[in-house]
Image (tube, helix red, strand yellow):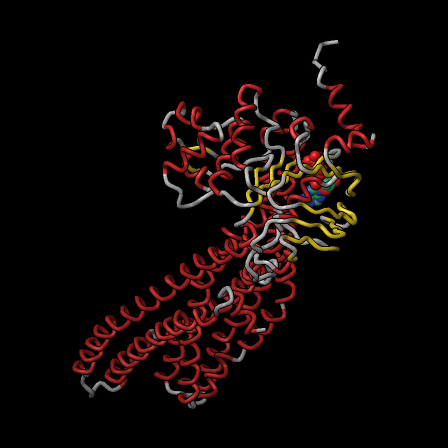
Length: 581
Ligand SMILES: Nc1ncnc2c1ncn2[C@@H]1O[C@H](COP(=O)(O)OP(=O)(O)OP(=O)(O)O)[C@@H](O)[C@H]1O
């Protein structure tokens, strides 16, 4: 349990906690000497008062002053050391933790990422890591430093007067027991509170990202209501957490502090009976006040850490999620084969016993009604997910054994929805090849019919695009995506609706660009407009997740099956035009 605790709050690297804890412990110990010296000052003055014949030992007082002054420097160095160790460790742990987690997320299957709410992951990256940071930079050092003083004080006081020392600390175990017994309750309330925070972040993200749809469908009331509900729930969970845990902590603190009263009672009793001298009683009074402050800090920080452990657990849960397995190099050849592939995103099968083969350097078209599984097939070739039944082979080798990153290096994809990073248009094209030169970027942009519109942008290739930058039309974005693929120059090209959103004017040009992109490549293309894939080497017709037919255009037309039906429908719709009735 304790091992888990340190493992989790240090994001899997408990050794990093040693230095901050050690430095804080030293800092805590440094605070003890001044208390002892103050007692000495008190004792020296008291001796002179109690016995008027004894002159005040000023030399001793000056010595104490000198030691205190020197000790201030030691304490300053110790505090500085503790401060720098705790803060550097905390920021280092959270920064490297965030980077490691981001790297790890990239290696997880899209299936796993899709199952998590994006707000959840954002909260984890920002909020949960901040919680870990605060635990390491504040709560843990404060706890260690606060423990040092009472422990040493207790041991020393036991030697001076054990009855008084026991009276002072007797209630302590009970208060710690109360806090310890409340662990389960705090964890339950804390989990609900964290969940409410994650839900609020998700609803807020959904509200902001979906603003266009919300406005265009006049849904502001309904979506806002969901957001409002999430915030109200967060408020309720916060009140519940504080409202229940606050009184528990207060009871524990009051019980602990009752030791002071008990000690005063015992002291008065012993003093009256002549069993205790006045200076010792005063020493206990002096230390008693100082001891309960750090002890209260210990209790409060322990409770805070318990709550923040939930954040650390959430992070570790994702860190333990296994990336897609496979270490082999990507196969050298580019033939693709599906052998009796069955695949489901969740529980319902999307592909059922799908088998086909694609020869290297050929163009294969996937056609079929919407939802028949065309995009899924391209995603499985790129191994965004692993299949549940059957095998996907590239160059006759099962891609489950191949390192996913090495496989992706051999595949270019042009998606229907293109994502632009918040960066210049140049760097957005460079995504295809990180070290591409300006000449290469311009060459790809020209091939993909991007160059002309880029030159018309305010700062040409340096124009910021993406979130908060210059917005591009759907067709322009798609051409940027083709330029990226051209730069990547991978042997397998997967095109998803590549020309769907292009205007007629440059459609022909883009088709030329695609011809450049796909020449000498193994190409799998999804095209809803059948006339664009009439020349394909193979057409695979999908229906309801199964291969209904496959062959070349003429063969499939002659079969008079699904392909023939889709073809006829498209011929018919070619003459369609919109008119007001
Ligand atoms: N990430 C996902 N999670 C769950 N189900 C999904 C996911 N992606 C697709 N599906 C479902 O899988 C089925 C096949 O989807 P797919 O996108 O492969 O079809 P498609 O033939 O490419 O359709 P379209 O032509 O409309 O793009 C659909 O029923 C779809 O709802």
